[in-house]
Image (cartoon, rainbow, N blue to C red; front, side, top):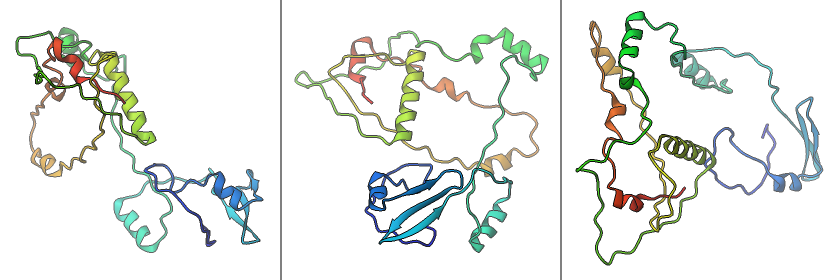
Length: 226
């Protein structure tokens, strides 16, 4: 670090936000440690010598730059830290900025654009899970997750509980939860094909999910734990 060599046993963890976390074992090894929280300086002992590490203050300037500019800095080894931000449009709760014609349609057909608040009705073609007569319940312990996966799982479970998609269960069946990364969609070619068009349509992807219920007698077989 900063031209100073340290020897220490580290563990590989799938975490975000920092390259390395130094714990109590590292501080004990290089004790005594002197911290200057105002000047962002840290003095430690390395092989009997006192060395100083300097931190970065929170003050600094931010500027936007193009991808070509980032490449140039990378070639020169001058890039210190970069963040990629995506800007998305958000509608206001009071409907300001919505054209009057669209507002009338939203008022006339509120159910079309509303978030689903309940499950679809039971039908004759509901899903079912037939089992062999001698089949025993399958119960698998939950997997271990890192902190950002755990937060996302808790968020998804809370949303599904609030919407009624899932419910608490004491089933003898239990399956673990998996998070699968979605591939980043690159739609440049598709966007180019829209050039010159004046009328657009889209598929309501939300309507493609949660349309068929599970048979009431088989719901307990779909239980999961996090």
